[in-house]
Image 1 (cartoon, rainbow, N blue to C red):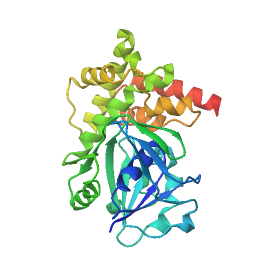
Image 2 (cartoon, rainbow, N blue to C red):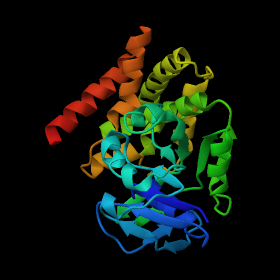
Image 3 (cartoon, helix red, strand yellow):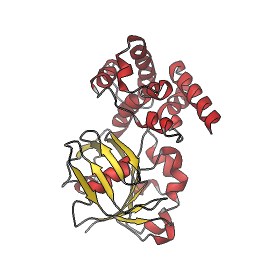
Image 4 (cartoon, rainbow, N blue to C red):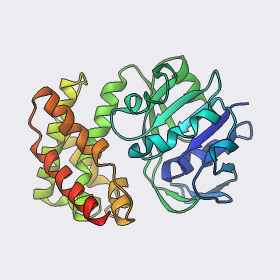
Length: 294
């Protein structure tokens, strides 16, 4: 019987907890700041599923589990790590399901790299209150092909979430970053996915993604030349009112994942001497807004 702790009950954390809890063999605990009694997940089919995992509010309430799933925002790594002492045992693995391309690096100050399993997740979901989430469409996870990766994938065998075991995780992470980086324009303009139908905005999105592709290739990822066009087409096919997580964070007055989604492109671009003016402008605008509102 696998035991799991999910650190970060936001949209992704609650979605995963709700689906995992449908298997009575899984013992799911949620590490949270705010108490709530249950998860109500509206699924893409329109059905609502209910889950009542154990919710703990203090690290000392935790006990060792087989798997810790970190689903906090990228900038919250230190707060997530505060739960590790009580939740980690000798055989605990830590799956990091976050944005960006630095899943392992983000947590090596707190854990041995050998116990960290990086995961790319694409599961559009929005949180409307503690434990209340709408999942927009079916999700998938890209998981490194390894014994730990296969074990992690098996946890979701009873769920509709697709698990993809892959040998080139770096490429998959950079492809997802290419998608996410373009979404920063919605956060700046406070406009949903429909804004991508404007030709001028679409070209700015392509510029952001071209820079991401160049930097990703310098980092060792294999990225196609037509990726910018493919990503714009994807945004245009999304529901017009779709709100990505950075846009949602700005609307809610929460900190945004600026560094993990666009700042990393600028940082690593400097390392490789690759110009990244589009992403640098995005970072400057969002950081200026965040500093003013903070």
